[in-house]
Amino acid sequence: MTLVQLKLFIAVIDFGSFSDAAHQIGVTQSAVSHAISKLETKLGVVLLERKSGRVKPTIIGEKISIQARMMLQSQAVIEQEAAVGRGVDKGILRIGSFGTTSSIHFLPQMVGQFSQEFPDATLEVFEASDQEIVQWLQTRRVEIGFVVPPIVGFDLVELGEDELVVVLPADHSLTKHQQVPISDLTSESFIMSRAGCEPLVRALFRRHDIQPKINHYIQQTASILHMVKIGLGISIVAAGSLPSNVEEIEIRPLDPSAPRPIAIAFQDLRHLSPLAQSFVEMASFMTESNAWS
Image (cartoon, rainbow, N blue to C red; front, side, top):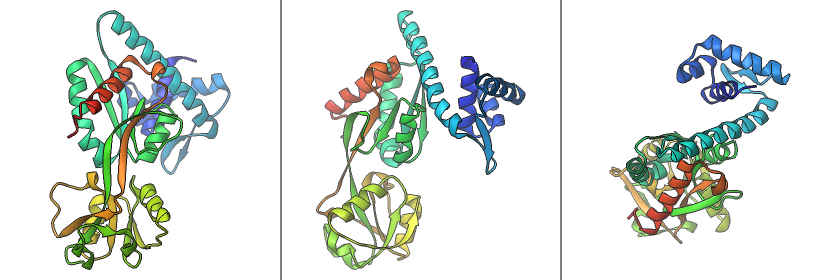
């Protein structure tokens, strides 16, 4: 069993096919297939299977992939430590980011600052829902992930707060409020976001004993806004996920307010790569310096 075989194994999982993995790594598809075959023979188990046109890990393959990612991460740490010893700061740092709030309001400033300090380093940003980011942190696909606290089992650096807001058609009766009482949402046709804020919205309803009339479930914020605009319902979304210019829609804060904390999460600062440790230190400094205002 070699690190090259493990790297190709993980690449197939991440890209969902042998051909895409081969293209990304820069080898032939037959080389990838041969490496995976030798790895399966060595371990005596089937690691990958094809489902719905995509290659996915088997149950044992999923378990082994977690350990494989840890081994590859350890290799990256060794290489980065050696580079630091030579006076060179380079390597790859993988970060998970969710939606507009983190990818636009926090990440660009952090990437800009980090790139100035480590011009030879490569940042790979993977975007998904915040629930998926947590899974990626657990499986070591990323070293650092933007998350919405509270979250168990990780160290956190809280960056700041977003806020849940109500989005309404321009002529809706609730626009008369400067802040919309949560209790007034009970009788309204509601569009539930399937994006990252859904758990917070549901927790908010439970906390205030609200049972909204959920008529639609939508993943994309842009689709939610369009449905609100044409009068199909109202919704609650994160203020940070909204575009800067929204026409024919009214946005109101909630009463009581519903803050949404944003943080970066990671597993044990001592075991992170040097680049990841530096990123965490930079994020802490930028937060203390109020760089987001």
